[in-house]
Amino acid sequence: MKKIILSMMLVMSSLSAHSIDIHGDANLFSGNITSVTLTDEGGVINVVGNTGDYGKVWLTYNLKLDNPNHRTQGSFSGRATAINDAGDRNAASRQGVWERQGDIISFYSLDDVTDGNFYLCLTQMNLTTDSVDMKFYSVK
Image 1 (cartoon, rainbow, N blue to C red):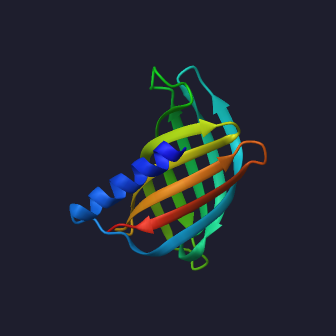
Image 2 (cartoon, rainbow, N blue to C red):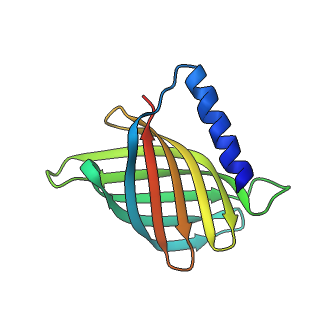
């Protein structure tokens, strides 16, 4: 985990050097795993929760077991859809990498939202409690 945090810090500092800038404080998302489907290639995890201005959010994580040297990490893609209290809808494409340590899966992704925002997302899922917590930072 320390290696991943160090790698993310290096990536984030190199992103700043290439004119990608993290804006403001982290936005917070809290939710729960609603279903898990396992496949030979990986699996699909569905999540529902709430976050600030975006309101209720549904997320899908399509995990791939595509790292032949480490069975506890790989890549993922996914989708997000959100509807706020005013009925406004936003969606996002999601892509990144994941790592599992014990009952915790950590996800690191860059998301492209229909409202024009890009977010760097740091997510942790607890497979024992089905809880999901995410911090996401504007990078545009």
